[in-house]
Image (cartoon, rainbow, N blue to C red):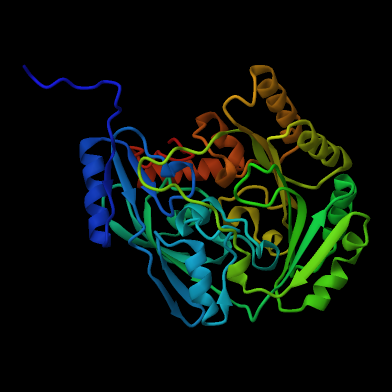
Amino acid sequence: MADSIDASVPPRPSVHRPRTVEEVVDVVRRASREAVPLTVVAGGHGPWSHAPADGLRLELGELSGIEVDGTIVHIGGGAVWGDVATALAMHGLALSSGDTASVGVGGLTLGGGVGWMVRSWGLAVDQLVGAQVVTASGDVVEASSEANPELFWALRGGGGNFGVVTRFDFAAHPLPGIAFAENVIDGDAAEVLRTTRDLLRDAPRELTVTYMDVPPMDPSAPAGARLSAVWAAPEPDRLRAVLAPITALDGVQTEITTPAYRDVLMEMPQPDGDDAPAPPGFIGGNGLYADLDDELIERLVAFRRAYPASVVFLRSLGGAFHDVAQEDTAFPARTANWFVMAGAFDIPGMLDDATRSAIEADGEAIRAGRLAEYGNFADTERPEAVAGMFSPAALTRLRATKAVWDPQNLFRRNHNILV
């Protein structure tokens, strides 16, 4: 009798961990030839680290070299930002790179990259000066403002739709050190947010702040509300003076230090092995906002108060983020001054259907005033949402670029741009 097949066990993807660009080419050509799904994983931090049940999974972790040439740094497509920060610190340099050490250079950069130095140096893509790309046809091409400039433009915020980036070239910045403030909030969160909003309207661009209010179950951050601030120089007294309107508020406890830049990047537990469980579901969303008006602030504070498993996260924009013209990159909403995320963990047994519906309704009210959605914080594939991640002009241009470089939509395991 023939061996039986257990239909309850889903097929597993074919996992490939190339050590060379040539091996990346082989996998891409195989996926194209066999017309199977291709999942590209850079750092393994985001939602696409959970591969589809079939097809090919391309993990770039072995391509993680970091080479510094003056202030230009060449970074392999599988590197993670914690390693980049460590390597650049030895040269007195840094890049604005997000806030988590384990995040992959590839995913964060291709989606834009809002980081701790966004007001000082802009997005990660604003520091990108070139890239090596394996295209859907299996060719290896260079992309920059001079070589394949339209592809280069699309890589700067258009996501992983256009090829596998095996090398990123960035212009790094001198950074002798930073000052860091941690403000634990035990008082009126709305008052803190209003004061922070008013302060950031005219604050020096050396200052970038993050507000986070999370439940005890969030493993990535201490529970409760806190406002963290990075000053892009080792000047704690300057940071203390700038933050004075916030630290003078009742219920705000402040500590200012001068850590290494690498040390302010969060350490987030990573899945262990291919059989690691997926993280819990998340009900919510995010947006890029022109400002934090009083109504939005009240909605955010009320949302966090109403749902014990909820998370509210904000990051200041402006400064260098505004210096880049809207048409210069695919990233949306260059007039935004704030990034805002609000949602709740969908813990099994903790939320009922009525609560889920209430969370979604309140979340929709929060998102109503956004200028655009930031794709790097959107954790599921939602084809209907892609138009909200780009300006209409950018989306038209991205579709035209997609038609040139990936007309068969091989690279579709992302926030997919359709021709």
